[in-house]
Each structure stands twice: as C-alpha cells, then as structure tokens.
Length: 171
Image (cartoon, rainbow, N blue to C red; front, side, top):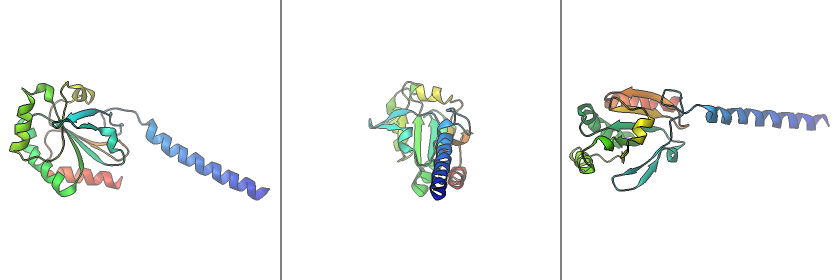
C-alpha cells in the first residue's frame, strides 16, 4: 500500500510540473513587445497563397514589415535574401500594400532585387496596425513558442539577422 501511494504521488507531481510548463506558454500575454506572444495573423502572398503566423509554431520566425518606397527597406533586402539563402529561416516579409500605389510595384520590386522569400500583402493595413508599425522597416524575431525575442526599428544587416536568429536557438 505504501508503494502505491508513492507511485500516485510521483505521477501527480509529474503531471503538476507538466501542467505548469504548458500553462506558462499559454499565459504569456499577446502583444508586440519583447516577451509578448506575437499576435497571429493571416495574409496572402502575391500568388494568392494564404500564410498564417501560427502555421509556423515550433519554428523560429522573422517578421519584417516594409514598403517599396522606403530606402532603408530596399537597402536591407539583399541582406535578408542572403540570410534566407544561407540559413533557411522562416521569413514572413509583410509589404505595407495599403501604402503602395499598386501591387505591380511590389512585383517589380521583388523581381528587381531577385527576392525568393515569401512576400505577404497587407492590403488593408490590418497587420501593420496590429503590430503598431512605424517607422519601417521593422523586424520581429519570434521564437518557436511564438514569443517575441527581438524587435528592431530600421534596417538590419546580414550579421544582425544571423546573430538575433541564432540567439533564439539558445533560449
């Protein structure tokens, strides 16, 4: 009888700790600051494919907000493409389409810079409003649990992208 109580106690203890761990991840507040759970969103690519942030749970994600008319955005794109090619990260590149003249400009921009990562169109400005984007470019690094680990205003260099992405792996 004593052995049975010990087994029940140990099982209860394990269940308790597993519950605490999973509750912690679920209890993180949603927001756009470091340590917050990144707000989920769904947007379409130029090809009409629907992409949702929550589809990448379990993976580290770089979310970058930009526009074709933004010089620092254009400056950072070759580094982002190199980062994408050499490190194979999940990049959700969100174009502020509601501020563009038309989507043809976005297509031309992508072709000019030979970008191969997915470009999402924020046609109504809903996601940029959700993330309170200003100024641009603006980048978030989100860990495998969906928690924002890094936030940057302005263009990032290739080295900065790699550094921030790799730091999330160690957490």
